[in-house]
Length: 429
Image (cartoon, rainbow, N blue to C red; front, side):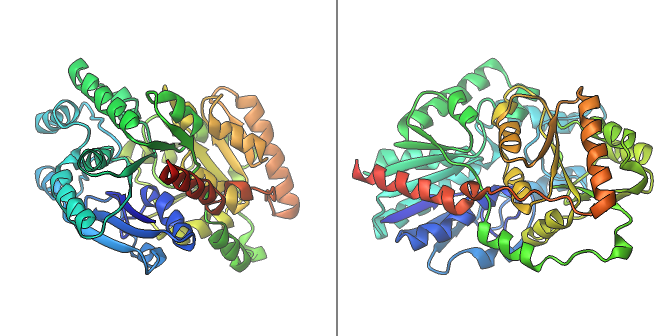
């Protein structure tokens, strides 16, 4: 069976956006699928990770179409240190009029997202590909959700089966909640969202909450998961820290901080615990604002390590070698369905997790189900302190805090089995 996967983000793009399908491609190849990926050439990527190119199976054909480059224009307008907003449309009081106008235009006139300007050329190339090599199954993955509109037009033009993969909400996505567009713009978002869900033969969702949140349509939930083979190999190769290096308790946060994550609550909790005297808090691949750096200096002066973006495998090693991993769940409406790639990799690392966020979401459910750590709301200070102090006592005695629960059901390999079964079932119909 031939598959055309349409994805704006693909290696050498780095970060979480590429991991879901990068892990599934090898499993699809093993299952006998013939795969072509339509993606971007030098897109506006959040990060670059050339090492991920080695993980794309050789049999996968990759077609690259160059999109418009708004990142360079943004830097020209707001100096090289300013990066094109990625996953955020917030602005500060100190931001100038031009930046405010551009964000207003993006919110209200560029729908569904800035990547939509790639669609015209991508659609042309997809049509050529399907004509030259008839393809019965097209998969689009978003965000950017504009990618689904390419597949929608292909379905209207050709007799194909279309599967829409949803890694995040659309009209209910956090940056539209925090900085709402006009009623007319939001209505258009919802119209396009419903049209995609209802037109696709099948919709794949990263969480049950997202499945309930979207309009009616055929849906199945498949988790992001983690690469079980890679994680097992890295854990075998992990070298225990020397006794001389055991004097610090390493708490690590891996990845970006986004709107709604309460870093100050975490810092207040940590500094009130028995961890503080021996603590080293590390941020791996995290872009911190001046205000956030100020909080770190206030709460933990001299006890913070900030590391630039690392290749994916190096980031996994950081997770494995940590004494404790920090997870911050965004505190805004719709948090229940936040199941990031990072959560599954955190769990697979075997390192315990300190999770802080609103109660009642799917992340909390999984952490509790698999005994992966402690989950607390921002106002559960006493319970969280008891948890941290118990961990510190255990660490002081044995210098080992690991969770050995069997989470193989959550692996990308097992999640891919659900995907393969669903795709084959769709072709039968």
